[in-house]
Amino acid sequence: MIVAACFFRQEILQSPYLTDLVLYLYFFSLLILFTFGAHGFVMVYHYLRTRGKEDALMVLEREPVVTVQLPMYNEYYVVERIIEAVCSLDYPKDKLEIQVLDDSTDESVAVVARTVDHYQKLGYDIKHIHRTNRAGYKAGALKNGLETARGEFVAIFDADFVPNSSFLKKTLPYFSRDERIALVQTRWEHLNSEYSLLTRAQAMALDGHFVIEQSVRNKAGYFINFNGTGGIWRASAIIDAGNWQADTLTEDLDLSYRAQLRGWKFKYLDDFTSPAELPAEVNALKSQQFRWTKGAIETARKILPEVWKSNFPLRVKIHSTFHLTNNIVFPFILLAGILNVPLMFIKHQGGHDAYFAMMSIFVLAFIGSFLFYTFSQKAVYPDWRRRLLLFPLFMAGSMGFAVNNSRAVFEGLFRKKSEFVRTPKYRIEGKKDSWLQKKYVARKLDWIVLIEVSLALYCFFGVISSLCYLEIAALPFQLLYFLGFSFVSVLSIKHAIEARKLRQQRS
Image (cartoon, rainbow, N blue to C red; front, side, top):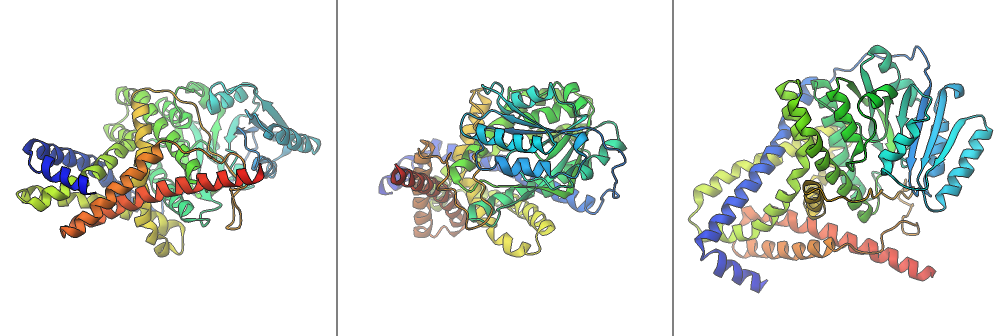
């Protein structure tokens, strides 16, 4: 800390060039964050304007053949649960085909085979499609299954989902209303949101997306995305849009935009949910966030030129740009966190009063984010006020994940290819459940953790310096960054050590 203080005093404060560089970079970082953060005001405005405009209750008038696809890879703990839930769908057996698209390489294959055989004997049209390679990953599995699917419509559920029995009867009527509807997407519900602080923070983030973003985009006429699961497609629309493609890590987002650019319509149901399990272990969450972030950047690079060449209104193009590029904020969150410390020394030195007065306007972005998540929690939970107490932790966590997700952004921008790393599921539903004794738990730490620990110490130095120099205005941001990097790095190390100890005890 003493070395850092000496550096900031001797190098930055005595060099006008370095001082100007810090000021310019920090301003640019906050400008990017403000632009995307202030977009929350736009979403809240549309949400309040369109709230309550729900469709009339629809009844299924015909029962078309439906194929339910269950893509999975090494899902030992949840295989039986998802197959049982799909076989419990309230739909005629002769009109229901189930494809278990199994790319597994472990004991899951035997569990799937045994479970499928059980339901075949009960008269279900259920098939175990086991590939010996993962060509195309999830996109490849879905495309392979589609080649033999007999359904006019295709519902898709990841292995960690437990669809409600009325899923098909609630979603299929919308296809009859409009022959150009390609997809009906349902809102995700969380089976284990109360399991830990980690799952509660995840639930808040996902609720913001599903309660506000998806609903607003659909009602306001913007493009929305299939969320990879909990939705049902018109099979012909998938083919017309170019089928599943594996050149991005978010095949669902990619196909969504290609279909809508072809003129297909989507329908989002915010009043009907599909329950799912949230990652209970931080390293699993990191891999999920990495895949989602990198895939979105890859999709933006691929799709945005087509969006801007299309004949859709300018407002749709602008909103699509925000939608596809919003993960670009993570490198700027990281940069702002690093620059916070030297900026505090510059401010204490004096001479830049106009600059710092102007910077105060960027606080509005935090207000926009707070309103965004306030309305999402209020719409879903009776105890929404209690849940909002988690907002500071959620913000800190977003900052703590900045290193992991910034890496994903740069890999996406520079076209570095990586495999589809699936998120392990452990069937964690209640507080008494544990993931420690399960397979698939990461026991090795990624080098990213070292950077997160270093940044936690660096931001702690910023907190102490803010207190010493009485720069109280800088303190909340220094604290959030410190807490975020500390929470993510300590939890990563803790979970990996616990898993390693348990493995050693068993061996």
